[in-house]
Image 1 (cartoon, rainbow, N blue to C red):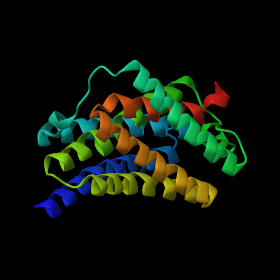
Image 2: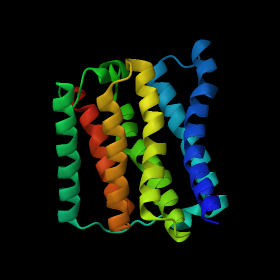
Image 3: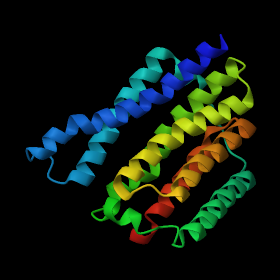
Length: 216
């Protein structure tokens, strides 16, 4: 029963990764024939629209949306968690020996506009936290999976695609591995402690905002 629950939760998280990457694959031919005149902005917008639509349909027909827990956060706790995540990113930036908004983001956001910033500030934090924390962790808790298994499973599945993506674009760097994995652990621990998705969404949004802060 527990093994089946772990497989199901893994499938939920992999579903999001599949449709996110599948949307890019579907839209790429349009870009090549000229229908998408700006690869970065339009591909990201199209990706967001397709992923949101597929995610909404999936959550609705599986009733997994009922697992999502959102309520008014405690302001002081929220500030504390934001401080913790910023402090962690600062320590990682010292290891990298560059700022919180490193040059590696320049290629990704070199043609950025406000709509794209909104997508990175809202779409990714909301969708990824709903699947990786809001639905998957709640499902695992409901099926009495041990806490350490929940943290490890959700953190690994969150970190690996991010690490692979950045490694393909910028080459593998050990700080990236540490950053993505431990950020995911922090998110999982905070969610398990609070059982409120708002904290994770806001922390995720702060990370993404710091990534493009030098462009604002």
